[in-house]
Length: 560
Image (cartoon, rainbow, N blue to C red):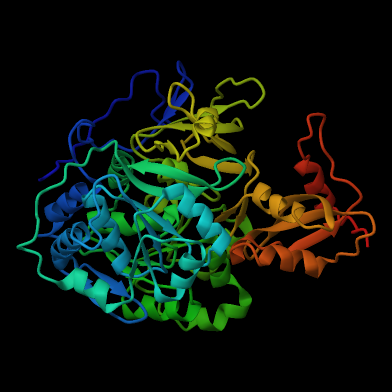
């Protein structure tokens, strides 16, 4: 199947061509030329869509494109990918797995070249992919299993014990095993090649987020969501004579890495995978594989301009690198300035998105846009946005701050078993409330000012205060607890706990930190503790986090 992508322009006379703002509707429209999407009613998996795009570019750009594993240097040419995806898909449908349309698959693995192939194979047979961090605790894995209800789990050897201790009793496939290797390489040309009809409204992935508050939630993304996200990125691509080479240290279980690792296949761009982040390996790989594009989390950008890494970074040949992308959390202007001084020939491009929006809904494209300091770019194709006054609910024009609302075909299907929450985030007209305080300038560039929501962003990972507070309050020596974000240049924010001891308790900072650390992934650890007499709350009992943040930043002294 070949899917054509055409360009159209739907702006009317009320829409300002400079910034996309419509004075009648108070809606900001994308300035990118929209690419046409397949009919929503057509049976089409995101794998069909991706491989069709790969096929249309195969004769001009993908002759040398491939999956590359940075550590092992294993290379899988894109010319082999359709066959390998088909082989694996057939294997997945056969005994002993016998996966079928509507099942879900839990995936726990560091980045590897096998993951995008596994994702594409599962998509193609209508099985929802649900990836998670290998660093997840047994408690967290148990919660995720309850959410995605997997028929099978694909894991690496070192994670199997966590899965078993979490009580998982269904099929387990070890990715770093000969068994999985044979599933990829065995000739399945005589197997059951009957095509499974996948609707675009079917759930393709269940990724994990905390929404705007509360416990972790399973975000259901459809094939339509993923297709529209890929199509929306097409208009931002720069024409080139040879395939781009992306080096991705961003985890493939996070929406940032997840969307990137499948999009590179659609665009015929090489993808170098790094399993666990290692700065030396990343720098060596930049030279060895002539990397052109470097998607990073903000802490890695900070590491590149950090004085302690100057010698190591300066010894690397950066001549092939065209663009460094940063997403997951905003970069401080001071870091941007340092980066531009250190790498004057490299564009630094920020983006903005949520798990609930299938990743980026705004990004920087091209040399001019990368000169606009502090922006997260312009809206992608098919995206509409509003800036809404949080107090009045009124739409606001450019240069006014308010909550960002977004709408488009990339908005999630919903949360697993949590309709009440989705109803509070997405209104009847399809607008998703992001919980972020933002504004658009007069050229349609989006700027993120602050978070109205309460999530903590540690190295781009979402850390929900409510989850940590629940754990803290389960301790026998703690009467009350509240968790806030504390600014940290190296990682963005760290969780800081305000703790009220029970009468007679002598619990100390180290004991509090250790208690939480045993129950959460490393990025969720409490890094700072302050003991106080009471937690400030409003009349309904909601924690006044802004007051606690002010106390923390003012150097408030902990009660010993």
